[in-house]
Image (cartoon, rainbow, N blue to C red; front, side, top):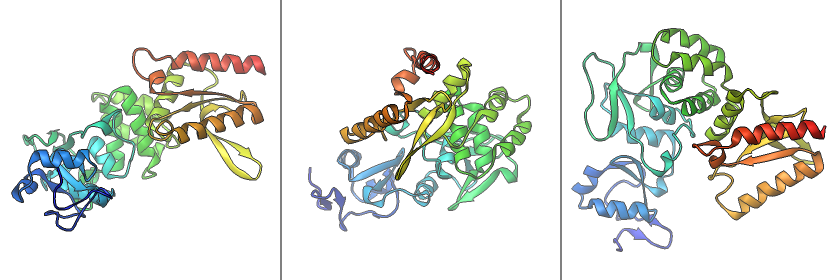
Length: 320
């Protein structure tokens, strides 16, 4: 297939493309100008288009921004509805709020109508009903959305444990509120489903965590009760060069755990070699024990992260 508006050499859409190149458009709009669903599917597979939401597309050259995300949401969210949960987190700029593997598919939009008896029903949104105070809602580029604080409370209360813990870390990382504010907000949910989980996680949440996998690795350490507990982002200085940082560990024991996410650590041979050189330097020059772990170690029924941490602490103590 070679459509007349393609630039195959650069995987870009040309000026003859019948829809805007700088903002999102819907499947319905594409059909109106003569494009067929299978055309859009092929354009996505070849990298010319990106599917932002179910039924919402944008030219790949448009990039990504909070304003662009808001443009996409306005196409499917009624003006009297409120975006919340993970969709709200993304709109606030929480880049890693998605659930594991959500980047492989397009998750539904979480949209709620703040009117008694009102509920959206269509194939684009994951809808429902909640009751919000005016102070719980703000606008981001014209889209009504729960505030970062309210969004964090919903995520920490309603998601399963791993997702909830990682979401609280991610929302704290935005810097829009502090842990004390988050703790105070939990009083509003007294007696409501999920508040026990929320109140258990808030004191442990930490905005220094740099990925959901790193957050869940820390949760495994804390839940197992291994002592000493983990420190985050331990800085190891190098003479005349940038310092190295270790995701989790115990500085006094010189024991660390590094979560190797596929996007930042395992995607290319160069990334893997860079991480290997870094770990070798820490082990040989600073006498650290560094345990690299991946999603297979941390998630699923076959996980062994607890054993890795326990054995690492034991070996570090023996060495000292």
